[in-house]
Length: 200
Image (cartoon, rainbow, N blue to C red; front, top):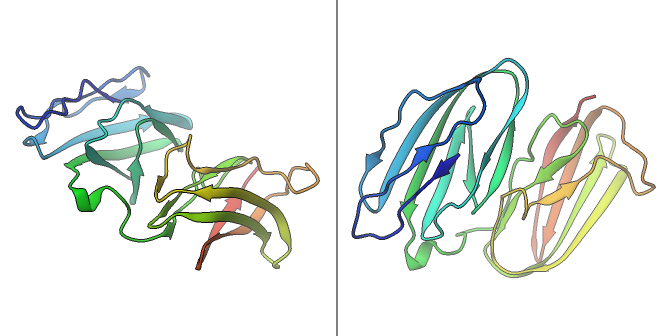
């Protein structure tokens, strides 16, 4: 997890991956960039599924984490689940301008972890303030659960503490079975759908 990141533009960015798990191996402590851009790379090999956590990211920067062919917008703190095996991760920080402070478009993003067993987090971003409703359906279109999140201001809802959370249960409080499900978002006039898998 990155720490000790300087946010003043007068000096270069400084950061380090702090590795607490003995199965992690740090390959590159250096960064490439200046006060407005920097990136770090890390190689991870896990003998069993694990979790990568981060905290205290600088608010003056857009923080992107590239891993396993995915890209997520990182908030101040959060976490991702990683399956067993080798992973290459890259953290990229870019200084925010006034135009970057809010998302350029509303999006429903990929849930994590996916497959899930059974709980998962559903990230999204809002270009404008909106009432948010997320619904989970079976592959045959039957409503499983409705998550009415209420009125949310424009911004990024991608970290674990800001994403929508589904505990893998239906409206009656029963655990759902393994299989493919679909989740939708309704944010004002915006609507989208994505697929998730429950695997037990």
